[in-house]
Image 1: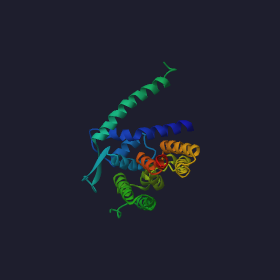
Image 2: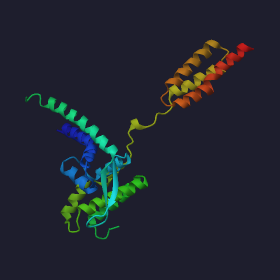
Image 3: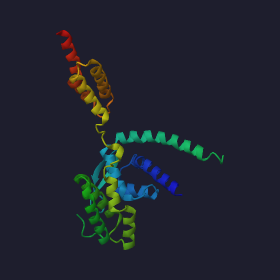
Image 4: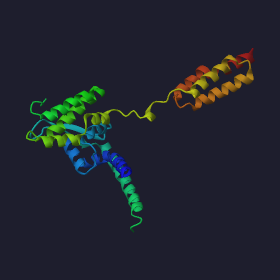
Length: 112
Length: 150
């Protein structure tokens, strides 16, 4: 039980970055929106740690940010995908498909 | 800043975070503070009751966790390589070769050993190795050539 929890934590950590990029594909989002989407999907252990991750993605030029007026309240920082981020996402998608198929094939071996 | 309308629990959390972010470089600290304040302003409405506020803060994680996640990782493997016995051996070998160049069996072995260690070092960069060779490795050859010529 504890071992599987640790494995899930590692998996989450491994895919989180590219899940952020995938959420930004074709649409800009502000931080709170990104965080709640990932949190509801069960991919975040703590919501706040997303912000350091977003800051790293920006530093690595995988995402770009811009300030926008919000309908009610102060301006919000919006995140969007850069060409470099789109490329990273494309690469990861290919790798993930392969990975998921391999794991599924091994995990489902007994039932088939 | 919009501190006046914030729930006391949110204000308390941001105060604790402000203390914790002092561990970070100032621009990073400012950014994390702004991000978290924006998150709480978006997520905790003015009408939120105490249970809702506590729930939002729980999901966020403790200030310490956030700053730990933002701090540059200092994994032991990431430290730059430090000079060790290979580098010391290279310098000693080449120095011995230069100083004892008249005792050929000793100096020739020391010279070759020094050059090998210089070449395999993972600490020194290629330009540093060339400099080391020119500075320390050529004296032995020069001394012998001078000796032969005279």
